[in-house]
Image (cartoon, rainbow, N blue to C red; front, side):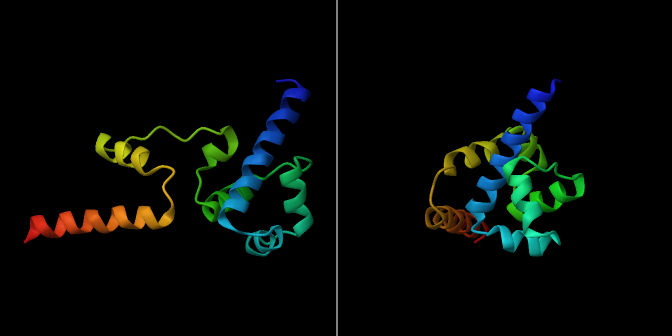
Length: 116
């Protein structure tokens, strides 16, 4: 892989990390404190000017609730569970959190009605 390709890939990773942080509502200072890095290190990672260590990626993956594979490649790992769960995940994708909670409540209702 050429140096230019490495630079493009690092910028793509940086963008995914920044987007994930913003989606979770964290500031760079919040993340720096949680990970134990200076804020400037987080800024450098998100700018693509600093390489991310594997242990840092693991910690950020956990904080952002995204797979390390997604943060590195932009692709979610292949799902290996029951097909119905994959369908449900696709069906609720894009719903706001209130609607997702409503789907969860309905699932609980269905489970309780079968038990009773």
